[in-house]
Image (tube, rainbow, N blue to C red; front, top):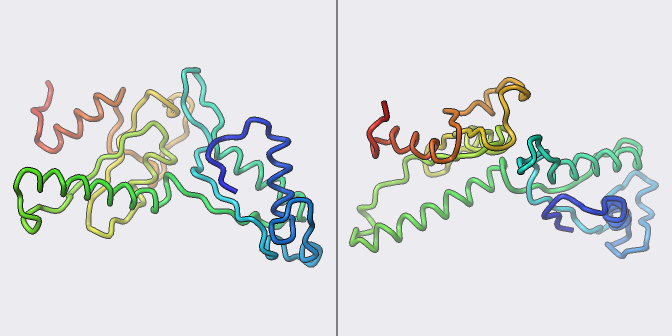
Amino acid sequence: MFILNDVRDWALDYQIFSDLLLSHQGYLGSYSQKNELGGWQQDGQTKLYFSNADLVWGSAYHLPRYGQGSTKASLEGLWRAHTGGHELVSYTYGKPTGLAYRFAENRLRDVRTRLFASQGYPIETIPPLRRVYMIGDNPDSDIAGPNTYKSENGTQWAGLLVKTGVWDPDRSGPFTDATKPLAIRDNVNQAVRYALEREGVLEPTT
């Protein structure tokens, strides 16, 4: 089961999820005898995947809206209640997991290498990717990701927080070591300019 967005008809969706997680070998309508012995999700049931863990996200509405992370949290709560406290086994990808940032870095390296090569640079002379700026509005994913990701290539990652989405200084709590941004800017344009100025591409504004 792949959950790629927050659910719409939650009662029906959660029932189907649960039926498959309780099943024998993933056959809908069956029930695993291992469940009653405490062998939850140990009988070849369908695995459960979430594409991201964002609890909230920003929209045109002035307050954050619940996202796919709320689906994950509520389904985990239902599973614990149904199974007598057992944890739901699932797999989560997307921000802030290291897998998502590793994929992004590898794609950036590939594109960068092709761009240098198209300009006539021999592959062996292309300098390494030194730094990547991640710009986002959610400290728990967009900033925690680059702060905790450890590049296998020595590339530095920096998170820049913008005020155009989830984060609001008047209602958001204090930053942790993982969610503290390198800088906070009003919007993406200002964040990009900050990065370019920091790298010496643009002259600092007065």
